[in-house]
Image 1 (cartoon, rainbow over the protein chains, first blue to last red):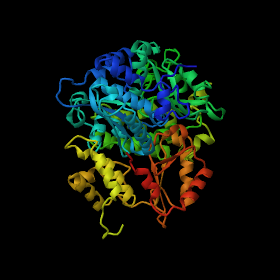
Image 2 (image 1 turned 180 degrees about the vertical axis):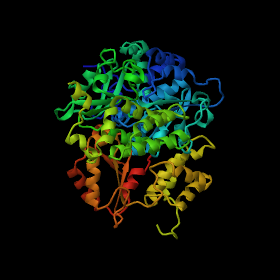
Image 3 (image 1 turned 135 degrees about the horizontal axis):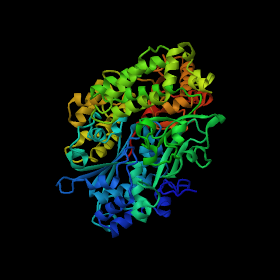
Image 4 (image 1 turned 90 degrees about the vertical axis):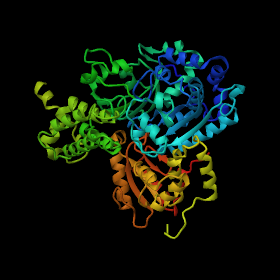
Length: 452
Length: 180
C-alpha cells in the first residue's frame, strides 16, 4: 500500500468533526509551529519539502511564500484557492467534504508562517454544501481555541472566513480570484505587480490551492526532508488524483508521485482498468487544459521509457509527445469515445468561461467552439482543421492570463494526435450524424488498415 | 414578486448580513457583494431583479452598476425568473463520457421542455452547466445546494416525482443560505 499523508484517515467515522480529527493527531502542526518554531522555520520546512503548487501550475510553494513582501506595513493575507473548476478535477471538494479540518489546520499553520492575521478560503459557489461543512468546522476550531485571538495562549491571532464564488472558472486564476474576493468581476489582473507584493486589497498576499495548504500539515509534522523522501526528483510527496471517464473505479486517489501511469490505470488499488472490458483510446492526464495523449504515449514516452505520475515524466517530450500533471484531473477515454465530440465539450467550456477581457481568447474560443461543433455534426469544411490549428496558435501566449493557453492546448493536441478522426468527420459526414457514432462502430484508422 | 412589494431582507437575514460585513477590513465591504447576492437571490424568488440588485447596492453603499456588472458576470446569478425547482445538469467532457447527454434528453422528454426553458406551470427550469467538479460520480445534476450523482433515468424519475410536490423556492433558498 502506498503511503498516504492527506487521506490516511478518510474512512475514520466522524473524521469531519473536530473531536475525532483531533483524536487522530489533528492540529499537531499548529501546536508544533506556534510553540516551537518561528514563522521562517515553518517556511524553511516547506522549502525543503519540495512541495509544488497542487492547483495545476506546479510552482514551488516555499519559493512562492518567500516572495511575500514582509517589509510592507500593510497586513498580509493568505487566500486559499478552493475554486476548483478545471474539468476532470474534484479532489479539493473530496478533501474539504471528508476532512475539512485538514484544510483549516493547514490554513492556520501556513497563515502563521506568512504572518497573516486574516485569511480567506474562496470556494466555488456551486460547492455551497461544502461551504456549510467548512463553516461548521471553522466554528469548532474557534471554540477549541485554534482560531481567534491568542491561539494556544501565544501572541498569534487569526481569523478565518469562507467566501463563496458564484460560478466562474476564471476565478481559479489567482488574480481573478482576488478581484472576485473584492466584490468585482473576475477579470485577471496584469502582472506585475504579483499578489506577493500587491494582492488582496493591494496588500501582500499568497494564494495557494487547497491540496497545497493541506500538505503543509504533514510537512510541518514530519519535517520537510522526510516529505521530500517520497517521490522522484523534483516531484516530491503525494498527490491527489481525480480519476474519471471510462474506468471501472472513478474517484479520488492519493498516490506517491512516481507511480507508473500504467499501474495507476490498471491496478485494482486505483482505477481498476477500463470499463466494460474495452480498450483505452486516450487520456487527459491533468485536467481539461493539458494536452490529450493517445494510449501508446500515455503509457510510454516517445523514447520508450515507462511514463510515471510525476511533473517531469508526464511532460517528457514537451507538447510534441508529452503532456502535464496539471491539477491531477485524470480523464480516461475508451475506444468508443469520439475525440472530436469530447473536444467540443472542452471548447464550449472555455468559450463559456472566457472572461472576455482579451480579444484573442474572447473571440478565438468562440470560433473554435463553432468550428469543432460543425465538424462533429458532419458539417465540417475542408480546411477547418488547419483553421483550428491557426486560431489556437493565435490565442496561445497572447492573453493576460493562462485561460487562453488552456483553451488552445486541448485543441492543438487533439489535432496533433488524432488528426485522422477529424478528417474522418469531414470525409464521412453521414457516418457522424448519429451522436453515438463511434459507440456503434469504433473508429479505425485507415492508415493502420493499409499497413496491416 | 409584485412590483409594489418592498424589497427588504428578513430580520434574520439582516443579522446575517451584519456578520458577513464584519469579515472584511474597514472600507472593504464591497467584498460582501457575492455573498449578499446569493442571499438576495434566495430570498427574493430565485433570481435577481433590478430592484433587488439596487437594494443590495444600497446596503453596501455602492452604485447599482457595480452590482449589475458583477451579477451579469457570474453564471450562478439568474437575471431572469426561473422555475421553483432549478435543475442544472453538467455536460462537460467527463460527464458527457458517462452519459450526460442521455440524461439531459431524458429530462427534456420527461418535463416536455428544452434546455434553458421553464415548464408552463413555473415549476421546473432545466439548465445545462459546465463542470461542477463531480466527474468521478458522473453523470450528475445539481438542484439547489444538493448534488445528485451517478444518475440513471430511473433516479431522475424519482427525483422529479419528489420535486413535483415542492411549491415554493425552498430548494433554492436552502442552498444559498450561507450560515455562520
